[in-house]
Image (cartoon, rainbow, N blue to C red):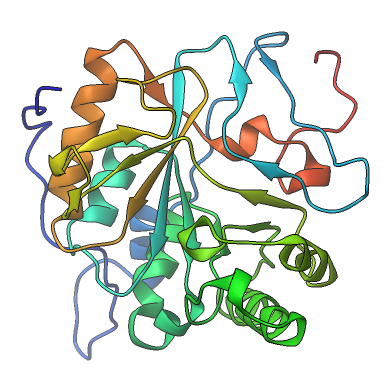
Length: 271
């Protein structure tokens, strides 16, 4: 793939709104409304995708891509231990739908940053408290990781996560069982990874790799990325690849039914 060119100058850092004595600028309310306005994303056309269905056993289904005719991909970003100060501005300016899987321990150091991401339109979903390999833990330890992360995210951002991404994509039957007890409705994995800010096996630094071993994007791909320093430039890079391939980023929550943690009514007039 060819790296993307610049998509415009990105101003300043991520939006921090601070009230200062004697400040003659816009009011706090005006600044918040202008900088952190909620975003909404386009919904798919009727009949253009197959809506994922609940599991027959009543547990959260595991989803790794969306069956769709639309040339769309879904950008998802994990963790939160480092971040790029320009990234939120880029997401907000270019109106890029992102789903964040937040490791809740990082709320302590970077809670305002992810509050800004939430207000740029990104749902805050569950990536556990401390990023363990879930399949190696007891049921009690897994439940603590999932429920504890959901509790912290709900307290901080006003909405309880309904989608889980287990760290490393590692899970077992116990994971989905306790996830349901914590209010999780689906487990979202990925079909491709952009190794932003690091090196991927066989693809090198900032490489892109499909889980099926193929090349390029396929409709309905769920792309894994990570919060790392330099993320704004790396997002510009993958946006260039996406657009050059004739695709566009879309909001995965608009392709998921409400019963699985998304925004779509469960009995739409399309399949």
